[in-house]
Amino acid sequence: MATSSVTPDKDAVEAEVFIAAPPERVFQAITDPNQMPLWWGQEGLYRVTKWKADLRPGGKWQSDGVGADGTSFRVEGEYLEIDRPRLLVHTWVASYSGTLKTVVRWELEPREVHGLQHPGPKKVGTGTFVKIRHQGFAGNPAQAKSHGDGWIRVLGWMQSFLEQGKTIDTRGS
Image (cartoon, rainbow, N blue to C red; front, side, top):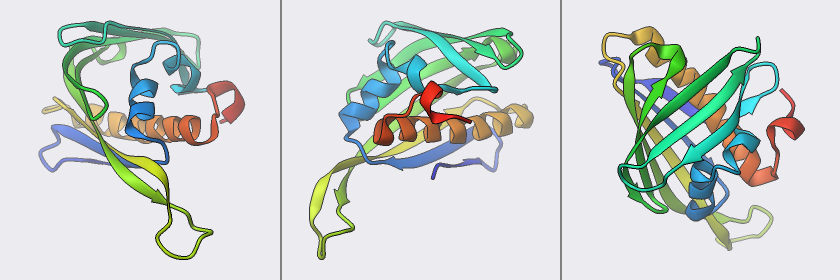
């Protein structure tokens, strides 16, 4: 289950989740333009319809989507740091947030997955502890809270996609 919190200074949101998939697979899910529209969103809420990415420091990315009421939105930014498959840092400028420009830092830490059905510490694969720090909300605590709630949803959708193969259309609301 994903969690999030707003830092005491109200400048950043920190969110995290464990996903039973290796870091490389998680990295693909957050950078591959063909995968992102499959899982980022929920029927009746909002959904990404198109994703473009030039995955290199200084490269641009852009996400287009539609809200539940049919209103289009865009989120875009620039990649600042890439250390595949452990780190991705990029700017975030959303059409629904006015001129607010923030920075998202994804940290993907490999963790061993142990089988629950087997006695003892039998390793069955590698999972990923995903930690997000989305900062730049100083002076805008409502946006920080809204994004914190959003990151819980996004991490849950990604977890469902990577662990169970569920997409926006097969997951339900």
